[in-house]
Image (tube, rainbow, N blue to C red; front, top):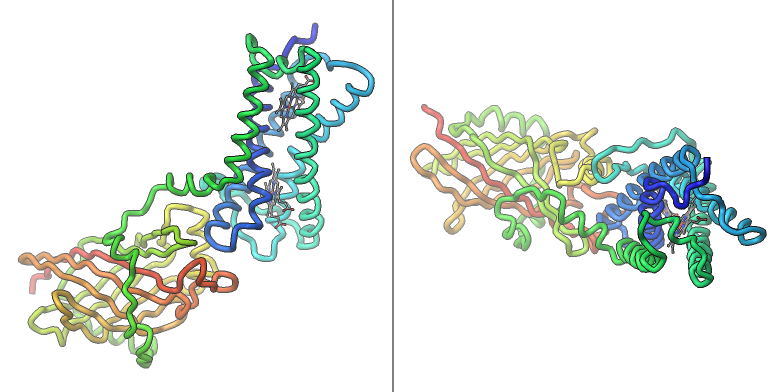
Length: 414
Ligand code: HEM
Ligand code: HEM
């Protein structure tokens, strides 16, 4: 069978797609280290890993097609043919070796962060020992430097063929296109890919596209009032049994019918919001008898969601909520009082194995037997050891975390 005049459509599509992804990947890869530790860096790594795994899958497909489909006869002869073959072979080595070495790298890291491809598909770690880490890091870095050199040689050769009016560029284009179009496309592709990876819109752009969790009173949460009393009053923390007793004595007179419980913080000035999907509250409240008022809230920390599966997994991990060891948080009020037009509930919060005083401020609208309470609290995450190791730094994630809530309740028939 005669060799075709051009590459197969599928081969052409994969060539340009992989080229775009690789340039973005290079730019993002070299930028990674420069992004200070924090959630943005975490996102940037997720993107680098996601794009890398996609390149791996596309490259395996590209290689399979290379053997399965007929392709044009090699162009040229002698040294130039040899150079072309060497560059193309090395491209395949990088296209498969770079993502593989990256995969080994993250699978053997001391702190294993999950990889979730495009925030959708959890990617497993390879079952390898830590001994593979350093060689993989070296190989990954070397391939990262080899790639731009290969691109320079490859694009240089393409330009050379173009100047010599060799019909080479057209082979990598769908039928009916000419070489000038290929060059213009290639220029846009290389510049666009580099911009995508380097300029940072990759992590930011897609983050803003992620479904934001609706948060009641989010604007209030964005500028939390410093709450001196919460931080400064060293009230003795009740023991676990004391708080259980408090609960037993609660005999709630309101049934919670719904609401929301959210948190918001920042990473490098960028707001990050989340909410808890599962929580319960027991409320005893009579405006005329505040001394008997009591509020107890239980929160299932594993139900925290911030609209990004991989970030949520980290937040629930040992460095933040540590839900494996402490799955629930509990607020128990010790005193409820009037404050201006609203109320203050002082109490204790048990979170992550630590119990500290906490204060909720809320407003209340009672309409017959129905009530809506909306409020907020400002918590010191470090007081509860939420954020250990490098996450303790407050220049990226502030210590103060705003918690906001809305509770709809119905008075129980007495
Ligand atoms: C930046 C990443 C790029 C990578 C990884 C890449 C990779 C490759 C590989 C592996 C082949 C060999 C295909 C095969 O025979 O299996 C190839 C061919 C080709 N590439 Fe690229 N390429 C890139 C960018 C470009 C650019 C920017 C241009 C144009 C300026 C270009 C033009 C071509 C052409 C014309 C061929 C066909 C060569 C021939 O028929 O002998 N490539 N490329
Ligand atoms: C197409 C594939 C890929 C390319 C071209 C690529 C390229 C790069 C580059 C250029 C760097 C910077 C290297 C340096 O600063 O020395 C880097 C770093 C890194 N890449 Fe990739 N990468 C790819 C795929 C992956 C994949 C699939 C993963 C993980 C699943 C990964 C994980 C990493 C990690 C963890 C670093 C930081 C390395 C370190 O801390 O030393 N990469 N990558």
